Length: 162
Picture 1 (cartoon, rainbow, N blue to C red):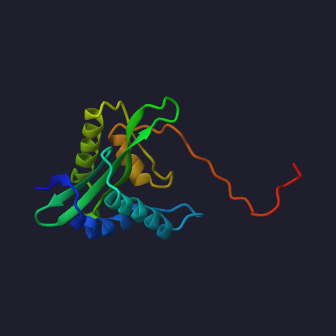
Picture 2 (spheres, helix red, strand yellow):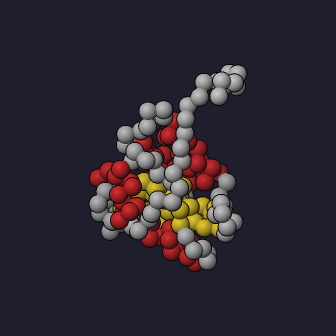
Picture 3 (cartoon, helix red, strand yellow):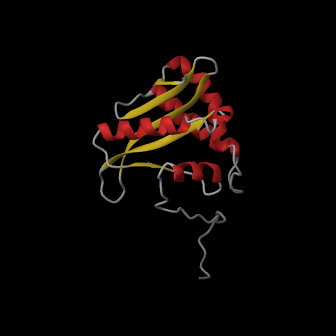
């Protein structure tokens, strides 16, 4: 039976291996899977090097399969109200464990952690092209709130023709 427990430093290599799953979807054309993976590695390293009391790093540990998932939740201030809330920085589950309740258990733990801190919401970011993750979050009751738009512009002098 898979148990959830706080991560410790010895879990680092297993978590880094799982982080590659965070780019296992059709990455938008202007992004590279490696840059997503490197950014998430950086977030994870900081979680170990600078542990914060207002953050949660849990692993899903299976007695047979080892670490099969993890979640990293931080406290953020709501942009509009300034109120603190839980924010899922990283959630990943091993491919062989998808559909077995590991992700749901980790998200439930994030919500419980947030509730015990008096927070009234949990937020997360997901790429628009990550249909699988978006479907999971929708099943868990999460709704899109903001959509980030981007436009590539050429570096150099400011345009004066508009």
